[in-house]
Image (cartoon, rainbow, N blue to C red; front, top):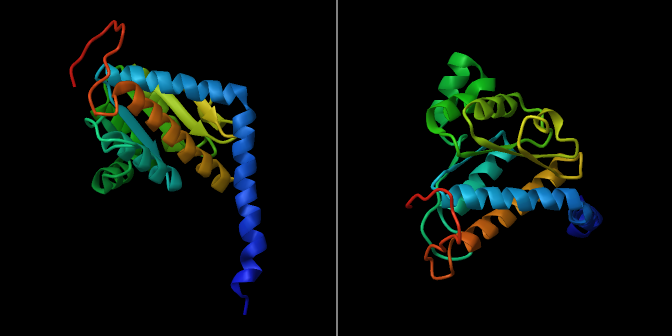
Length: 214
């Protein structure tokens, strides 16, 4: 029977693989620039009173929920809640749409019901090819939403269907997902610090073409 020490080489190998992927992400100026642009987009949308709608399947659904929780709850300090929804959490809605209209419509249909022009749709798919995420992005664009995808190396079908595609430089699902939640934390921190000071008060923009109250 194997002992704990027998697993040590694999433990260190997997940690090294995760670090290597993050180092590749760090060296990609194009990807870092896209993350910065998405940060700016989210800050602007939330400051104007628009909301963020996130979706994905499996581990990506969990990542969508995680990021939504950081925005609605808090990330680093107490402040007013921010409007964010993960579209995988209503099991009755997801199963009803899947049963009646097909699983590829479970997110698109919810966008039709909940989204408004100016909102930000964030689709998460390690392959970039998840049919229900791709369909949702088509729906989002038709409705005038701003669109963001978090994917793997190639971007898949999503890459050319969104305004901004953050492509993690890996083809391995676990490594991609580890970077996705890192990116989610970066976005959450920037949004929180830009919109609020650390006393939880709203940080007013210097200039805004549109003004909405919280």
